[in-house]
Figure (cartoon, rainbow, N blue to C red):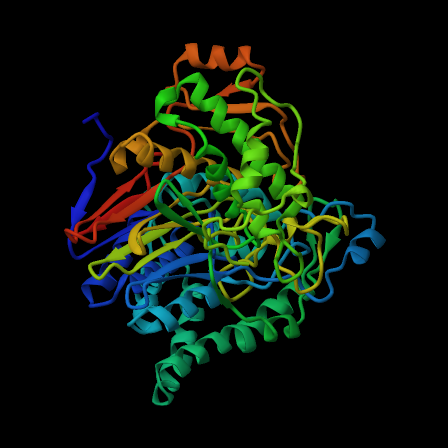
Length: 578
């Protein structure tokens, strides 16, 4: 076995991974309280909202995938908020805005995270919201040690906070200065906010667990929290990337009408493993399109991280992401051809476009209208800033993967008195009415957030994910292929040097693209990068341990052993269990 930066943790009771070690500890507490994997994942995720405010927040969003051991079924929780009723293409065009800015209040969507966490708890967990919020309230009220990543973010934002966003300065610049590493950092407004949601739950416990949790959701979306967000964004002008000072477009009606959806996932079988992703309100299906192309190759024979291998994976990514740009959008508003995009016939046609000796410089979406599905084919089980991640699996085989993001402190000011900012996910919309991801009131923007869950023969197998914007479904693919095709253990697969392309339009403002680009971690040999350059790739080299923070947990139904791994990149993510 090769050297790994950390051991593969193994246990039989439960495992939790999280983007911050104190988030993993919060999840572990729930398992030790008698909670299941969903309780653990929710507690870890809400703690991450507090611990990594430069990466995510409760004012943002969180897609969640859950495997229910009792039902032997996978569910997706649509934790993405929708555009305000007043947010129209015409509104932006009339003000001379051609791209929705990436900061301020104009790109704000209804915060989906809180509804998503509590919906997961309501339908699949065991414990109470009070249990879930206890670690997060401790972290905000008693505080946690400031660490380099958060301190660096606050330091870079200090001038903006002091000169433009006084509500953010009040929270993140205590006594008018950037906190020192190791200094205890508190956010008492956040603690007060969520103590009130617990009060709503407790007052309604006599009506039953589900009604009590619904009361907490109502307090957020149809009570004081919604009212304060709307009031603050309507009455505060913020200078944004449009070079204009703008107020928000929210009304209380936007919050009152919001509902979290529990959905079926989109699924593809790769070499005997069913990989499940959220629908096309996120980019998750691009992972499935990549593996549908790659299953036609003997990847192991090419050699791990050989020039042939990396070239093939990158060319497949270019084709899959081109389809993302043409076809993916909120399926409540866009007719996405799921069956054709994931068909064997379509993959076979698209695979012909991959030249083994030459890198493509074009964005080449496919034409699904030419695809005729053959009769008798196997059912593919297809159903119609930055970020962080958390996973959990328990001894029963319940699994959860969640990728919280949005509501970052760099892009919007903290709402006075609440302790957190609204999100800016609407920047991912296009102002072209013909685009699949075009802005429409009430529509969910297509995000990059993409947790992953895999089953084998209907049994629980693995949950995994990473932060990283458009790279999420590339770095997790690197990991997945390392594990499945090359037989590495979890930590080897996570540690291995990775790569990605920015060939296609970026999902974030201002949607730039770098045709033909490949970014390699520095540990990939120079001979490989030279060979890739000879095929036309525009190669960029990053640090040896720069790209992504993949987290993963596996479950063995035969032995009951649960194994976990966490990336050392960023020196913050961790796995815990017993």
